[in-house]
Length: 148
Image (cartoon, rainbow, N blue to C red; front, side, top):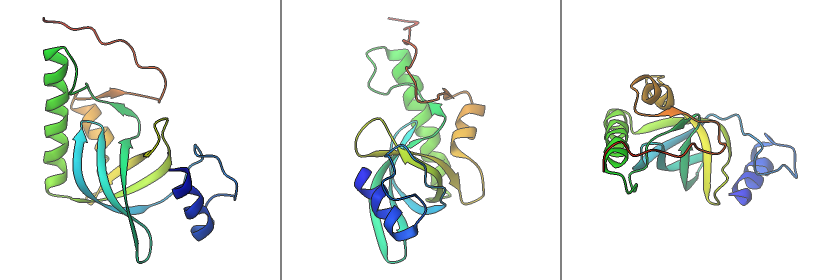
């Protein structure tokens, strides 16, 4: 991930050389969604510059969807609902724009705003539908299982 940011720095001069992994690249970077991982993460093939592509996991900035691997069935169901909604959104728009791209706290993944080809924000749509909650990258509140 850090290597990708330094490479983008060298090619696009968007970042000052020696930038930290958490610095942002404004974008936009065009990407094709290869797979929806869960309600707030996708795998894309990004085109950061002409004739170059790379696969990278993208955490959608500003949202947190319920975990699909939760022990709690109600949380798992919420995660699956968010994942299916995201899959439905990208069916009509497999190409997206990534902006405000930065490193994530987990190696190998980036955080970015993701915009569909019609201009809609995936994160905003999931928030407005109630399938995700706002998330600023900090510590997540402990999820309480309603039924079990």
